[in-house]
Image 1 (cartoon, rainbow, N blue to C red):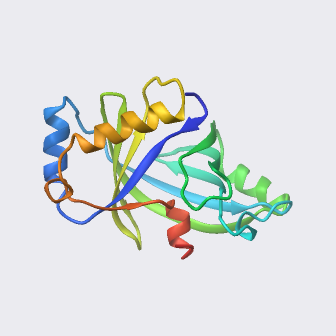
Image 2 (cartoon, rainbow, N blue to C red):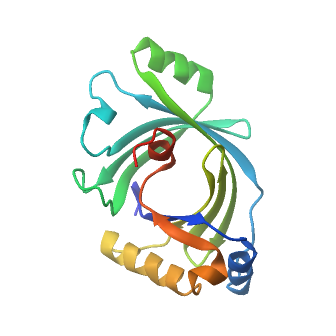
Image 3 (spheres, one colour):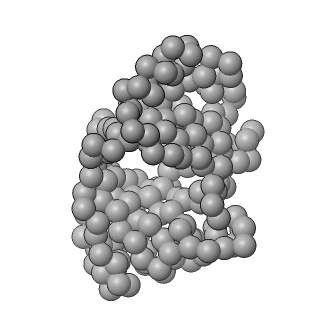
Length: 188
């Protein structure tokens, strides 16, 4: 499902140890922790924040000396409950050049999300443990396997999460249906 992202995010309300133990039992191993600094921009030709439901983001990410530019459009567009997004991302050689390019085209900085991430991969699912400055700790589950479409990917992701056990045993709290930029901007 190239260019389509299906994920679910949860607030972490307890220790992550129980969830990590379950991931190890399923054959998962942690990746190396990284720091991601994501700067989000608003477009001069289309105000991303001007809609009743914010459904688009443009981001420049710097992670451990590498950089990328990313655009996401969440679906259904007008619905506050999103099921997936179109995602277009590419590495860039010079993040500062991209920032200056965007500023020259009158894009404005909206917010910065600074987080540390430890990503695991298990059975076609990426599990990211995120500590987000000013927001707290979260866990994101993103479907990375092969699927015929969003409904199948969603069902498989939900089955994976349900198979991890009750929230109290995994530290998972409420499901968060908004992205980190929504939260940093108070768009809850």
